[in-house]
Every structure is written in structure tokens, then in C-alpha cells.
Image (cartoon, rainbow, N blue to C red; front, side):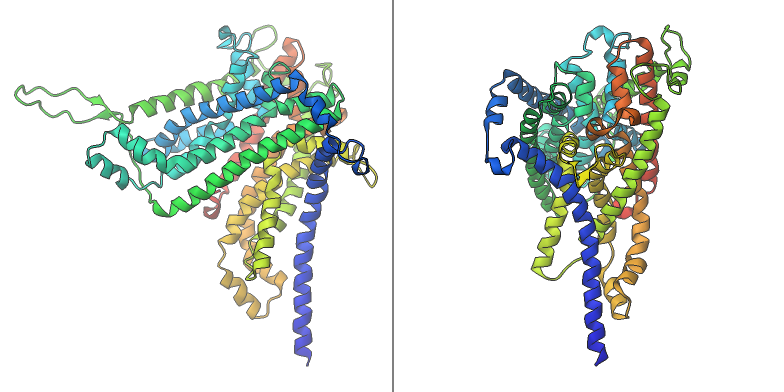
Length: 580
């Protein structure tokens, strides 16, 4: 008679264990993401509280301003141009880097991945160095123009197009295009009638994601455009920090959420179409054909024909020009300007100034102190994100047999992906106005910035660990449980080794994202506890050659720290996480 009691007790213990595992991340998401964002949205609809009823006067007021429509037009125009530019350059790059083979291909793939992992303020600093006064392209007069912002957006999102479209292009079955060519279609006609439609879902998915990133590129826009070329995000920041109009900022945040939701819906629909099409494709690649090697003797003359241009020459030239002109040049210019001293000579004075608290009046701390703050904050944020993300990934990796269980996990998965879509500015602003009174008055707490950064990094941890855990054969867990292992022991002995393999990549991504996070941190960091991205932005906004030189040196340090974290993470990438 004791056996049923033991079994019942074990089931109760199991449910209690999973309940705690679900409660911790859900509480974190509810308190530090859902509550702040909903409070922010609610402030737009209920300015006097829920008891005061719905008041849309704030919307009428904000949308009656010509400034609001200018900002919305600017946001959509910049996002559209950035998306079109990234697609125009990214499609040839996807073909060359994933459909063709050539020597050094792995190095070039790694190089084009660099821009996407750079913090947005570093990208802004790099283009200021390239296009600003004294820069190699300063004579073009593009500094602080919309063209500079669009170029920076293309730089930042080129990788998204190349990797998203290229990953699918590499698996396209070439026999369909070959059949069209055998039936007499020209290369161009075969591409536009066969290949391009097959790539459509991947292109649409990449375009929607790039549009989303361009519409929420707070760091790049505010660094390169300032007030003149402000977007919805930068306008939220200005309305909050400079004009103290919190209701207008709340209304604009609602607009921002709508734009983000539409972009995410398009991306999700495109991704589903792409996933359905993947089962029809196989691996294929061909050597890069820059020249046609057919130089046999011409009939009747005995002379050899001159080599003809190969079909891959145009995309190869476009890709080479993009890699050199759009990616490598801004990065190299940033590094070079960091060694240019205020008097025009070359040296290490900018780097020496970073450790001197009195080298600038723009800051309350030295830049090296800010770097230390960034590292400590990123470590705390990474710890929080990995704990929360691991619990979520373990939960989502289960495969319940009941419909209710599967739907519950689906909702949990969608809920923890929301911070990836909602802009960091909205998250930071929401935390600022919601967690400022008891029982959660965290205004002066140093943990507030790591928490905000962890909210942004947690979806990346989940998406890194989940494929690794889902690669486990569920029969291993069932066999261990049948042999009497407790749920904790099953987790430790079956899932544990896989989790350890995935943690390296997850920690690297979370640390790099937290280190370069600027949107939420710009709202929440205290003057005596500034982080490196905030310091770079403030130095760039101050006059003086010393401030500018220090901003360049600080941007190089931040880029090096981020690239190192991502590089180590990539080395720890497992086969199960390759498709992420």
C-alpha cells in the first residue's frame, strides 16, 4: 500500500518542481517587462489611472503636432531606404558567400558578420569618423545627414540579409534552375522565374527583420542624426529627457509597439513559409566563376579566344565593393582616428585620457571607470539572463502529450520572445516610470540597469539553448525515469551535459548584448555609474577635439570587448545551435 503513496508523492514533487521552474521566469517577465510596458501603454490611454476612464486626448494632442508626423515619416523613410539598401547589397553577397566556393570564403563570412555584433553607438562613431570633418570621406558633406544614417543602417543589417537569404540559397536544389536553362531560358530569366520565387520567403523574412531593426535603431540615429533626423525612438527619448512630456512619450511608445508588431507578424508569416519550403531542398555549391575558361582554338583561324566574363563576376564585384567600402573602411577609419591626437599628430594620448577623470568635464567618471561599470553590469545581466533563460529553455524543451500542455508551452515561448521585438527604449522608459514607487522603488538601485539588459538578452539565451535541449532523444529521459531517477536526477544526468555545451554560446551572446546595450541603459544609468555606450554618446555630443578623440578610443575598446565575447562564443558554438 505504500507504493501508490510514493508514486503520488513523486508526482506531486514533480509538479512542484516544474511549477517553481515556471514561476521564476514568469515572475521576472511579468515584473520587469510586462508591467513596465503595459504601464507605459496604459499611460497613453489612462492618464488619470484606470478609475479616470479612457482619455484619448493625448493621442489627439500628439497627432495634431506636425513634429509627430515628421518623426513618423522620417522613421518609415529611413527604415524603408535602409531595408532596400541592405537587400540590394545583401542578395549578391548571399549568392557569393553561400552559393559559391572560393578561397578565403570562411574569413569573408566572418568579416561580414562583424557589423551586426557591434554596439550601435560604435557603428555611429565609426561613421562619424568616416564622414565627419577630417574623415576620409568628409569632403562628401554627408556628416549628420539622412544619407549617413541610411549607410550606417545598411552597414548594420547587411549581415542579416546575407545570412538569412544565404542560408536558404545554399540549400536550394539547383536542378530546377538547370532544367529551365535546358529548356532555353537565359540565366536572367531562369533566375527571375525559378530562383527568385524560391527565395521569396527568405527575402521577405529578412526584409521584415531589417525593417524592424532600422525602425528601432536608436543608437545609430541619435548618434548620427540627432534631433534633425529623429525617429520615433529618439523622439521618445527627447520627450522624456528634455521636454519631460511623459504622456507624449507614452503615446509615441504605443505607435512604436504597433510598428514593431506589424513587422514581427510579417517576419513570422515569412518564416513559416520558409520552414515549409526547406524540406524540398538539398545542399549545393559551385566554384566562383569570374571568367569563362573556354579558350579553345577558334574554328578556321587557329587563334585562341579571349576569356569571357563569367556569370559570377558582377555579384562578386558588388560583394567585394561592399565588404571593402561599406564594412571594412568605417571600422579601419574608427581605429585610425582613435590614434589621432587633438593636435593632429599620431599617438596614444586619446587612450591615456581614458584613465584620467579630469580629462573632460562632460562626465562624472573617467572612461575607464565607465568601462569597469559596463563589465560589471554585463556580468550581472548575463548571470540573470542565463538563469532565467535556462529555466525557460528547459521548460520549452519538454514535449507534453496533452493539447493543453503543448499550447501552454507555445504561449510561454511567444511570451519570452516579446522582449526581442519590443524596443529597448520602450523597455527602459517603461521601467523608469513604473518601478519608481513602493513596493518596487528601484530608481536608485544599481541592479536596475542589469535587469533591463537581462530582459533584452534573455530571448537570445533561450534561442541558443533550446535547439541544444531539443536535440536530446526524449526516450533517454523516459528510460532514466523508468529506472527510478527523480526529475532532478534526470535533469542533471540527461539534460545537464547538453546544457553545459550550450552555455558557452549563450553566455557569450548575453554578455556581448548586455555590454553594448544603449537604448534602455540611456534611460536608467545614474550619472555616477555610467556605462561605456552612454559615455561614448555623451563624448560625441560635446565639442572639442579631446572629447572626440576619447570617444573614438572608447568606441574601439567597446568594439574589441564585444568582438572578443562574440568570437569566444562562436568558438563554443555546438552543432545543434548552428541553425540559430
